[in-house]
Image: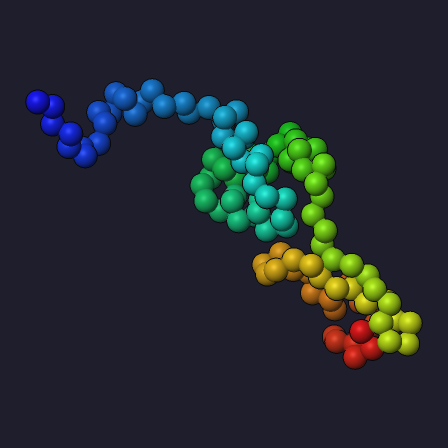
Length: 111
């Protein structure tokens, strides 16, 4: 009768796992196209940072997600014909309205 213990596989079996940056790049390419995805993933591991910051990866990432671009927000006409920015994303990806405002006030009551 075989023993079905939960012991880890031998080191030789682990050594056969692919250590290929191309495979990892394909996985990372499928991160969501939110503004915080790449910076947050680059903090996980130095290898990921190297891959995520490479110009070839960034070009492929933009091309891969170009089909479904993320809508950051909308500009709508508020009170007194003031153009207001309404963000559509949740934090940490949300762009504050004041950041794209053309008025010097932090919050414009006319929006």
